[in-house]
Amino acid sequence: MTRFADPAPSPAARPAAVPVFARPPRCESCGYELGATLDSGGPAAPCPECGTPAWRSSPALRPGSPWQQKPGVGSFFSTLWLTVAKPFTVFRAADVSGRRARSLLIAQCSLASLAFLSPWSGVFVADPVRQLRFARSFTRIAQILGAVGAELLLLTCFLLAATWAIAWTLRGYARARGWNADAATMRTIVAHASIGWTVVAGVVWSMLTAWFIATLIVSSSGSPAAARVLGDASGWLSTAGSRYGLLPLPVLVFGCGGVLVAKMTMNGLSACRFANAPATLGAFNGGAEQALPSPPSPAAA
Ligand SMILES: [Zn+2]
Image (cartoon, rainbow, N blue to C red; front, side, top):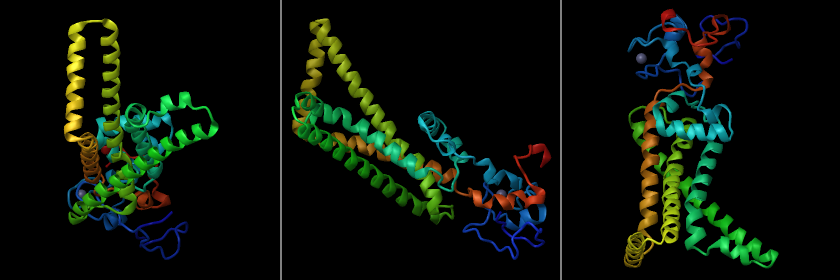
């Protein structure tokens, strides 16, 4: 167990324990460095700056988002939902060591590009589904699947790059304010903020699906008024498409995604600005003899 500073090392502690943290433990409320406070007063001591009990800044209170705790389909979707519905709660519980951040980031960007591409590639670009139905040779099938795979990979890489570009721009803002924005914290924040792409992709996918279902219902209902409304709408769409080209729509969609990712990154930076990495747990536990297995109740403080 690493310790922040150890004026009276216990036999269990490493000899000549020196601060090994890239970042000393800080008060999560105000950012005050708690190393000396923890050494003299232990986890119950109040922060000299704001009075918050030191244990409240313990990384033990950051068990990680559901995905960080246990990756799986269920935790993927509960992380997605929680990050959208309660971003501050998720980022306040996030493990800032970057645990399972890469897998979450890649899963989010892959799912988003699948949702972005499925209506486009299925209907507008090359129509791989119909092509597959008429494919007569293994080579042709491989060709079609390869093209879809390449499109997915390309878009996933684009989303990954865009996420990092947004996050690195905002990192400058965080650093200027003295917030924690080291690589591990950034990985944690970026992984959860990339959920913005999945959300926008899901909205676009749902709208297109609703549009297709509406088309099906209208064309089977035989109502002339409904058919006229639908015809007018598709006419307007194709006129707008030929006038402005196909670029504005993706720009609008990816712009919305980018704004959402930026918003979530800001939430993350703000909620993790003084977050302590799990490596500092020893300093909060006050060594083996003063172990703090679970956060004490406020009454104990
Ligand atoms: Zn404080």
